[in-house]
Length: 306
Image (tube, rainbow, N blue to C red; front, side):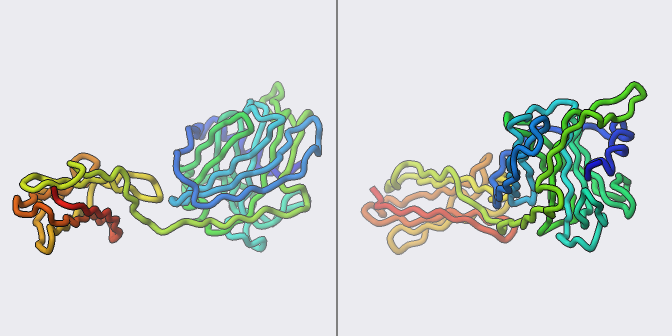
C-alpha cells in the first residue's frame, strides 16, 4: 500500500525478538545541521510531517528530528520509517516500486516504542548476524515529534546519503495478531514520486579545546609559588582529557623557570613554578599545554611579578 509496508510484516514477526532501543540522545554539539521542509495538509486525518531536521555531530552520530506537530505523541498505533540510500546512488540497493524511490540500502523503523535497523538483502529489508549492529540506534520523544539517531558507521560509514521518511497512524492488530491497515493514514516526506532528500555528513577534525583556565594567585609573587591549570576537552565528544602529556614553560625576565609540577590532577592539567625572590618587578611569561593523540591546546599568561 505504501513504501513502508514492504517490510512491516518482518517488523511484526520480529518485534518480540529484538529488544527496544531507546534513551536520551547525548548532549553533543552538532557539527552540521540541515532542515528539510515537507508539504502540509495532505491528509487531514493523518500525521502531517512539516519538516525534518537532520544533523550530525563530530562522532558521526546522525539525528533525524521528525516534526509532526498535529500528531506528535509517540503512541503505539503510530509508525515512523526512514529509508536511507547510504551511497546516494539509486542504481544500488532496493530497486524501488511505485511507492518507493530506488537505491535504499537501510531502513530504520520506530514502532511500539521499539527502534530497529534493517538492511536490504537483495529481496527485502532484513536483519542478520552479518548486518549492522544497530548499537548506536536510539530515539527520544518530544512535544513536536520523535528524534531518531544512529551513527554513520552503522550505515556503511556513509559520507553522503539520500533519505525519505514515512509517518503512519491508525495501525492496529486484528484478532489473529496481524497488522490491520484498514484505518491507517500516512504522510510522506518528500511527497511520493518526488525522490529523496540528500544530506552530506560533515565532521570537523579532532581538536582540543581549553576550558576552566585558572591562575593562582592572581599574579606571581617573588619568593612564592605560582600555578596555572586548565581542563582540555575533545571537540567531537566533549570528553575531558585526563591522559596525554602536560607541558609547562615559563620565564621570569630573561631566565627560564623549571616547573615543579606538570601533570594531571583529577580532571585538570596543572603547572606550578617557584618564583625566585630576586624576580620582583620582572615579567613572568608562562604557558600550559596538553598534548593528546598528536593534538595540543595551549593557554598563556603574563604579568609583572609582585
